[in-house]
Amino acid sequence: MRGSAQNKVIAMIPARYEASRFPGKLMKDLNGKTVITRTYEAAVNTGLFDDVYVVTDSNKIFDEIVNEGGQVIKSDKEHECGSDRIAEAVEHMNVDIVVNVQGDEPFIDKNSLAKLLEVFKQEGAEEIDLASLKTPLLESDDITNLNNVKVITGKDDFALYFSRFPIPYPRDTSANVTYYKHIGIYAFRKSALMDFYRLPMLPLEAAEKIECIRYLEYGKKIKMVETSVKSIGIDTPEDLEKARKIFS
Image (cartoon, rainbow, N blue to C red; front, side, top):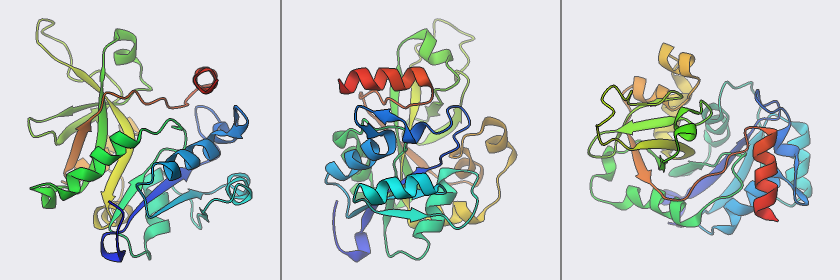
């Protein structure tokens, strides 16, 4: 989907140093390179983007990406979430689609990203404000893990709600329900992203601490794209050890 200015597709990697659950995780070593550098290089190596940037509030992360020869933008303002950080960075850029790649997910799957971008070229694409990925959760421990954000969709695969708790609640255990994990990679229309930036947080987003709920609260439509690829986010020191073993 690479192209001219009017349909330019870029990737933005929001990178906050003081992550609440695992401070400094993006600068931890992941088999010879930092987590944020691994993620940046993985995004570039997909070949799907006209440009890839890290956007950060941290001098440490800024210097790291510069030293690795990458493109990085320093945030001028304090931000509550990654989408706000990206919106500040792209406000004056001439871009069409902005993909938010999580800085703590260095195992980027090119095919999943390509499927995500493809929805903007399909029939009915004008209805889509943003698109994101989901993957089935098969183990009960994964379904109940509050670090895994769950998503439910309608029959047209537009998101109905996101939660850290298992949704839907299994009152009828015989119901044939598949639980889906939300993978925090988004493809936004720039216009939807800028709307998000200018609109205040509402109670549901504040309660769950899931930023994409803001889009739903303001009536935006989020197209969910299923992938079988399991994302590996680094939320805890244990996750980092798992990632090191995968790289090894």
